[in-house]
Length: 364
Image (cartoon, rainbow, N blue to C red; front, side, top):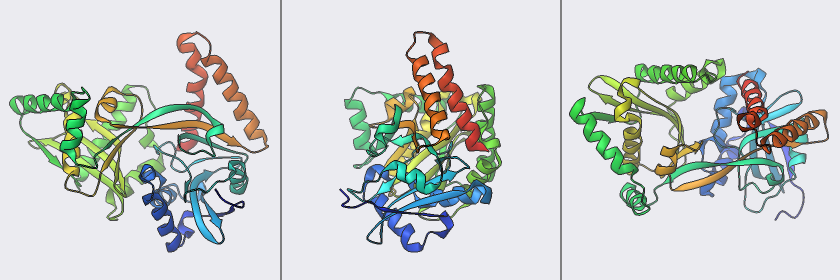
């Protein structure tokens, strides 16, 4: 436990000193559950570059005795703030040294807003827990002993996902041709095709095309072009002959790869090329320093079957005494009242409306 209140300094990501960046990265590295690229100093900097000056990205630097003991980035508006990179970030939270505690309302006040909203806050964030309004599982694959040990554990648990992948692979080889896997692909045509698949998928399902916003497109393209050895994008592809049949564009930092943008050729759906690609990525990781493939939140069958680690993430808000906090509190009260009623899909409407508005805020 901290013996006295921490000092909170607010700086721009680009103004972090080299020592502060190293300290932030070291705090992450010391706690395996916080290795996500989305919690790193590099994520804050890459988002700030993509969003530009008007986005107003800031980093709260917590200090004790002059030493940096915690970091959290946010996008700061006139009255409210949200996690940096939302809605593109799968994890949010305050990265600290062990035992450091902070009053989250002080954090909000230091940032200069009346409210901080969050949607994927790590469940282990004890100081934020009273503000959690709901929790969902986030899925990951940990392979400290390599792929074969992990696959054997999945089989022993009665999960046949890898057996199914092997069957699909053999069927694909017989009927269309042998799949060819590539890691760290620099193929721009393949990258562009994946982005097109994602846009088509969102349009077909009536969802917002996240990549249509200017800053999101700049972000993913900058990360694709990055050559930083510690952090950046990584494109995985699966071809049959000259044809791209599945691809993933993911983020990497520390020993973790975060599955991010995934897609496949609809004409190859019956062979499940996306699942085959997941299996190839996991096998490839045996030859690398990466030991975790994070699948993120969203309760899909493939995530449940591939994963062997579940991390709770929560949504909610921290509010100082302000109109912005009162408005959000009223919205959550309406949402919770509706969700408690047996009205079927109607009960979900306030929650959907809040998520929709937050999506629009984030993409501006």
